[in-house]
Image (tube, rainbow, N blue to C red; front, side):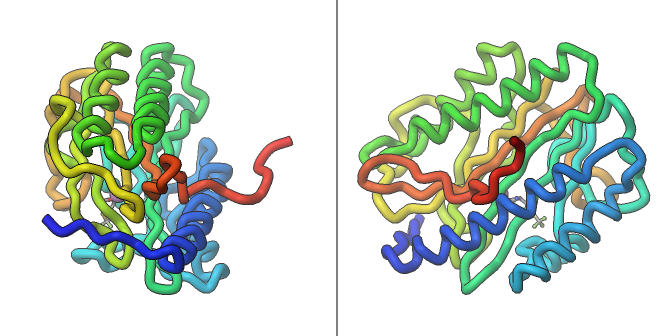
Length: 255
Ligand code: MF3
Ligand code: CO
């Protein structure tokens, strides 16, 4: 395993692609409402990224046909945008990557559209808190599996389960770099985190059982038990002082 360390200049470029990723995600999140199709949200994603003078990281990656992954309800990740209409009660995960000046940003959020089911709220908040706790665990000297273990602890305490078949990853000049970042595992294992590492941490959390399947479209990952799933992701840099979240938006979103 070779984990690329980024120089100060490279981290500067990743701050730019990271901020753009966050701003795209924020813009598309605000457009998620009943009646919108996932294809319209993909078109919006492409417009916003092109308007920034950047490129979508996902389009064409291993043949992926869109700029964003939109995964609704029992879909865990990698949902392909199309004619599907967003409906009240849906839990919608948006995952986007932006490539700018040679570096990728990668981030995901899950938004609830008129959700009233308290179980779904519990799921989404567990996934959100798992990512926050994982980011807070990142600093030099910590081992990678300490981060994984943190996710598993938070998710388990909320009575939800962690998807084991997909993982987070290093990110930088390539969308997927070493190391792989599982969302479960015993603490104290794996590589020691060092300043200059840039990691995409992405808990995928199921309300029911952890098992998943891939649909015939070869992309969409769904829960086997049909229960809902949530996904959050940030691109994070390891600095001397601790973690810096690169995928945060600059503009003030809500007053
Ligand atoms: N953010 C996801 C990941 O990190 C999505 C990439 S898959 C793609 O793996 F094909 F859509 F690009
Ligand atoms: Co990712």
